[in-house]
Amino acid sequence: MPIPLRWRLLDAKTGTTLTDCTDIDGLFVDHTFPIQPTYERYTLAGCAPTGPLLDAIEGTGSTWFGNLIVERAHHADRPVGERCGTSCRRCYEIMEELLDVSVVGHRPAGDGSGLLDIDLRGHRRESDANCGGSIAPDVVGYRLAVWAGNGPGGDTPAGECRYVTGLFHKRPELWSPGPPLTLLGCSSVLDGPVAAELAHIRVDGTAHTMGWGQRVFGDIVATRPSTLGESLVDIVLDAQIPEPLAANDRPLWDMWRAGGPTEPNLWATLDRSDRCLWVRAAAVHRRHEPDQPADTVYHLDGRHITDYDGFFCAIGEAINGPGGWFGGDLFWLHENAATGDGGATPGFRLIWHHSEVARTHLMTGYDRKSWLPAVTFDDLVQYLAEDGVLLDLR
Image (cartoon, rainbow, N blue to C red):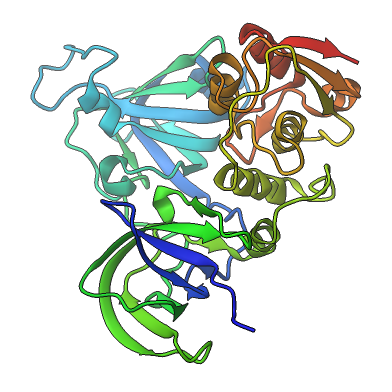
């Protein structure tokens, strides 16, 4: 019996099939999602604190204040005091976000200026700004703000500082670089440089294209006969998956390959991290079909909505059946609910059964998965209502 082909490489420009293969050595890495962050120490040097940062120094407020935005106060080629507009792209590219921040110490600056050096503990949100945080920008001071997330209130000014020590340096990759990719058991030989999108093949032959982070770009190093079949070849590439899949991803992908979940709530026993992976797998493997009729009533089983990702597991199944997807964050929830193309015609009726479970568990606080203020039950109700969903809480 031939070994099934699990993965397909599609030409990045034309979308045509380059080859199918049985497995890919280097696609799944020996890490568990999510990677826990490394906390660092920073010093706001020459700081004039205001707002919550000043309250923390004076002892009238909490020494922990969530996320701190660090952005250039002035361009190096502008006089001090001449500020940019809030939409200036140059400022946006400089912006850094420090997460789960606490004040751990402070002292007068050594230059007699009357300013303070303030020590912080936190970690940097991964981004491409400032060469991934490795190079300090050429700026004249930084403006500080405590960020409350995308909800009402926005950010609160927290003062300015001259520079930040401990922030700009090269950090190790979150995912350790693996060996060159090896395409195992390929149906055809590849020629020349490879520039391909990756797709996952179900047993019924349906191929689901994966994200930009799983593209395959590189050169062929070697080709050899495969031990997986007489007519198959193994292809070694000088390439790595930009965002490899975690070890705890593999069982979910194997289940979707076999046809996907066959009954609702198979995600209920998973912890929150694996529920997040469930939603990601559901997004990749969604079947794009017309939205159901406008008068369709959907029933949301709320018995297992004990966290934010559980809500998306449940609403995906309420709209699209076992393993269904209806967004994995507030952006896609809005897109699907307000504009359609997620399985339900906008303005649909949603009956949320056992809503008290989510009301009890989705409460205010700081979410150490998203590193943002937690999305509450009331937030979800408000977002759904604003997007025209006729919500019936039971």
